[in-house]
Length: 310
Length: 265
Image (cartoon, rainbow over all chains, first blue to last red):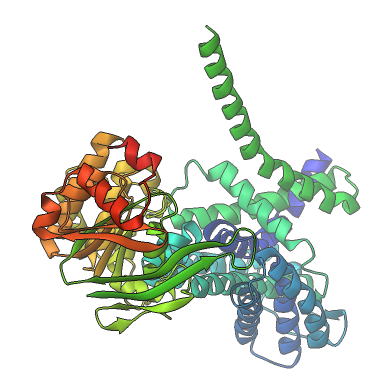
């Protein structure tokens, strides 16, 4: 009973975190599901977003302008990965790792140190974990919720345009895309840029929420993003067919991920084991479809052999 | 008009896998020519189409389509002039997109893709009418994912996509080879229809000699990366398969060997 109460008390916080990381997970969805590229830049660009926003806000920049700047920094990081892949022929996973590594140095340079705190008592912020139970605009649940809804709307529109359709086609079939006059390299770069823009934007929210930016804040972000995508797909994949609803299911997947994490911590799991647990869950969920196929194939084979021997 | 002048292509040069695919090939097509291409394994048929489409760069030589030298243009830019259908039905369409979305992508071939809506209401109506002509019932399934269609339906759709924006040149790379005989015939019928409608300049690779003789106004045979037989008009119409094989032997100095071609005779 006590655990349940604790959990309920922590719920607004978990949902807030889930919403913030949901934006990041939608970024991962764009590369992993739409472009069919596993982009590891995100571990770096998430922290870049946080760093850019915090430093700008500390220097008196308008809050929303700082968010836009974080988004732009993410676009830039994505462009670097995109060019490493398309212009220099580096496999996308390695290209992402190279950018991620270089971003570590860049993030240190942006902040001037490994960790930059931003005190909500001294500086005005868009959101803070301090306000999760207040009924006000600066409650992260409300602000991030609205922003997430707007972002899903914009992405739904964008991927329905000529440009967005070309990105989707590039992810599905590059031969066909080029035969239809689509510049597949350009679209890959564009897709990776948009993805990292969202990831950095999400990082900028998280830095304000937790009151600091840290060079390591994006460590393992790709795994959390993938977990959210997979949970969303597993739970809502059958009922949500529309593109906007699919994006929503990714965000819901992220929220559920954070509620589950909160639950296992409340039940007494060593918090140091969290990343191991997350990685194991993602690995299993990625393996399930593969095992299903293998199982189906072996049954077809056995059925054939039985028929031949009969 | 299409002019292929002295195009050469060697794959894996300087290695033990070195393969001379095109050996200084020359080919001129006039407006409205419908050429069928046959040849043995490794004769360079597909390589020739891929060179025209810009899948790989040429070693030397030039390719000119309708007065535009496309030799150095990347594949996606040449697409402006070309309609293409591939042997594998999976290659020509985006499986995870709807029928109408695939058509909308094809309708924008050669145009800048902007932030305008990807498919308009007016287009949907047009596509419905166009799909009716195929006679496959696809007009009732505009929003179905292409991945749900059969191989024949996908090839017919790819053909429609390739000709939706009238191409200067239509490239068909054994586009009926992966289909069962009945479906192959249907797709070939549709091919003749769409080519005739716009009088399209077309190159069609086939392994079926009877088709190669019956369809189109010109027939070429390839051997070791060159054109060795080239017959047109009346002469082509009256050809028999035996005469064709004799022509091949006389000009190439070797027996015509292709299991696929011989088996489908």
